[in-house]
Image (cartoon, rainbow, N blue to C red; front, side, top):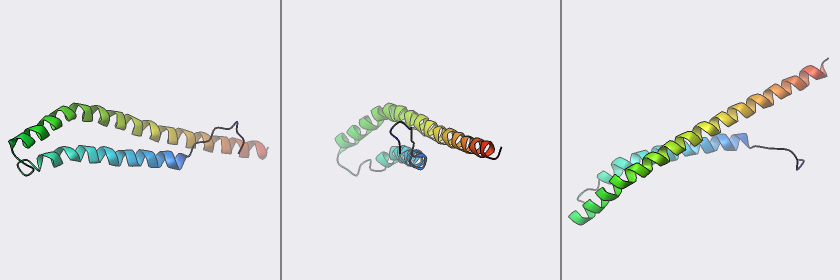
Length: 99
């Protein structure tokens, strides 16, 4: 492949979007997971520490979630646009070759 050509692993980019969505869902489910252990991990200090962490992490998690959502959307749009451009160029080459 020539060094002056742009190449994109479209399958890899699509897989990235899928994996990122899986991570995003996992982060969302961690919210309820943290509350399941209330009272089981130690005394009230531990419960307060977990509650404190979860309440402060909620804001950060919301930002991370929004960023993940935007990255997933951008990756999927890039794959779709690049595949369409590739298909269009292929068709143009076929059409010009048959003239």
